[in-house]
Length: 153
Image (cartoon, rainbow, N blue to C red; front, side):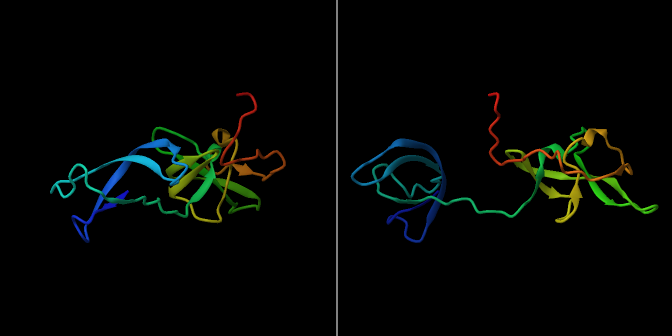
């Protein structure tokens, strides 16, 4: 939240919204909010009017993969990348360590360690080892969603 006042022209104070009133005023269509902000030079005083602008978070482009593709381990999280075998044709998997970002629904963001376009194993990763030969079969692939709704909850 960014707060400005006529008492300090050209100066904006940064703060955070700490509470939002769930009731919308029918005549003005305003919502009352409570904000907490730093006011070290006491520019704002009780009873003063100020303008508040809500600053929305920016959108980031991320590389997201299903969370079931990640092999979580104490020494580091990893995924298995499918790549062509060096000998005899076919495909093998290579264990690749990754740094994870935020998780949303069935997906997790990858901060580093994986490139766009690489094919990762999404289920059964705990059964794999580095160099294991694989055959890609997506017929039984689960339906991953950003907002999963379990049927038994």
